[in-house]
Structures are given as C-alpha cells and as structure tokens.
Length: 91
Image 1 (cartoon, rainbow, N blue to C red):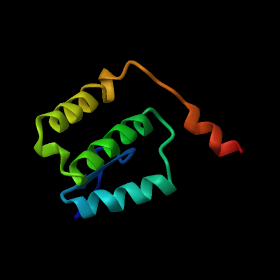
Image 2 (cartoon, one colour; image 1 turned 180 degrees about the vertical axis):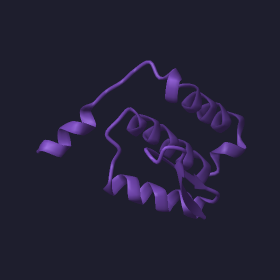
Image 3 (tube, rainbow, N blue to C red; image 1 turned 60 degrees about the vertical axis):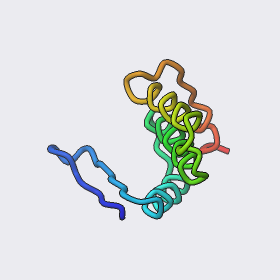
C-alpha cells in the first residue's frame, strides 16, 4: 500500500509505503520523476535498503548493518553531496 499525505502548509508531501509492492510502485514513480533536491540522494539510499530487503539480506546481521549504515547517512546526517543526476536533465 502507498499513501500520499500533504503536510501542514501544503508545500510538503509525505509518502508512506507499507509493503514491498508499495515500495516498488514508489521506486518506479521516482525513477520516472526524480527529485531535484538532496532528497534524491536519500531516495537512492532508501532504494538500496529496499533492495537489501527484497533479497532477504536484512535477515542476516550483515544486511541489517548495511541498512543501518544507509540510514545513518540520510537526511540531516548526510555529509557527502553530489548533483551529477541533474546533468542528465540537460542532455
């Protein structure tokens, strides 16, 4: 399941997925309509986490460690930024 909710002042949206199928729907959407902010980088890390879960690696300690590392570098904790994905918009 995937739901979309506007936040307070209607300038933000939050998407909530509750299943692997919902995650795949969101991945398909964001691959076709990418984000333009640093949230795109968070999306790429989140997508890697979904792939770990899809491959059932999250049931092993090493998979959980990979997910924890991805999460620890997202949002306000991000220290490395790249904007290379924006170059493809102008090609």
